Image (cartoon, rainbow, N blue to C red; front, side, top):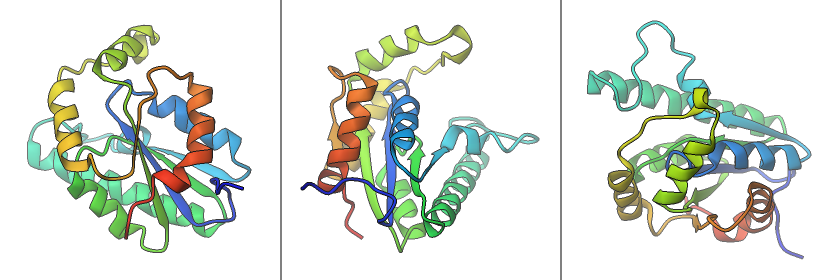
Length: 187
């Protein structure tokens, strides 16, 4: 029998990808399918900063970087707390480079980190954005640069999962079944 994600193991699942890759939908579905899980949304955690908030690509750049690091620390603290309580943490967040992934791994030392990159392609990400409710659409023009950076920095890590021909439900089912064997990050 194949190993699957369950509440009985100390795995921490990180699902990343470009904007529009399906992270929010897939992580919600994965978390709903697990008996004990917590979905940790990086966008939500980053928006906990209200006064003085600077987005990840905002200015000044040093403050944006400081707030991204704070968000990453908070996501890892929540993941550790939920894991210690017997819940599988499922993190939804854009992790664009090796430095940020290494930072996550360093803050999750007692966990087996499973790293899944949803990679349906730039055009599919753009298309999915047009299907969103107008209030949930985002304006992002850095797809080519982000994809190139992610492939350069993270291309040999975890599971790069082309989901372009799958439904969100099929994607979530495969992540649960296959991530333990395909997405492990060596610590």
